[in-house]
Amino acid sequence: MAGRTGGGAASLDAEEIRRFDALAARWWDLDGPMRPLHRFNPARVTIFRDAACARFARDAQGMRPLAGLTLLDVGCGAGVLAEPLARLGAQVTGVDPASDLIEVARAHAEESGLQIDYRAGAAEDLVAEGASFDIVVASEVVEHVADVDGFVATIGRLVKPGGLALFSTINRTLMAHALVIVGAEYMLRWLPVGTHSYEKFVTPAELRLAARAAGLEIADQRGIRFEPLKNAWSPCEDMSVNYAMAAAKS
Image (cartoon, rainbow, N blue to C red):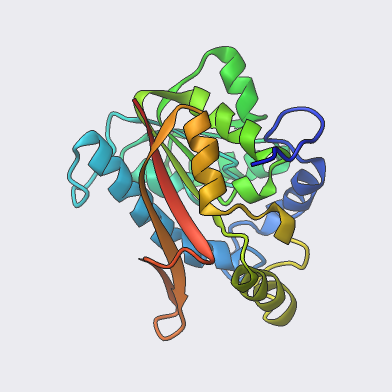
């Protein structure tokens, strides 16, 4: 896969950062512009929990199955994913270049009684510090970075030997374009127009290649679909639109 290059760190795209920073004040508004993310959250938490428990031989049905594990949420935004992962017992660090989002995340975690180490910056900053984690999560981030190959390589460097990288993103298919951009953004207005760019979507094959080049072996992959009758998202076999991938570091 050809890297999508941009100035600076592979995880940084200045236009994307400005777009999400502008949403900071309403990130936790369940009826606001991030409403689809809140609805999507339970499905990805379940997928990530189960993948981590399979890797580390934990009981997924336990009260705090991720207790004792360090976890980095890359592109954490205001903490919508970081908080439930912390409630599962993980020692969570969240990093995001959008500083306004980090301030919102810190305030919300404090209100919720959660200890999460939020940092304003790029994943590459943590690599420079020599940091590493049992689990590194990049959820709904890959399709917003400047250089996919470089970003996944950074994720690989942040995963401890024996650890796990967890991704969720959007496939680059005509169906994804129709549902995510035309449907969710322009017709239903579930998302602000311009949230996604079709050319930045990443196919499962491309993500697998990038992961393997980063020293990660694919452990699991599955689709995530919206079920209108349930008004909820759930895991599935169809990866043609949204999908998740777990990749282990030997």
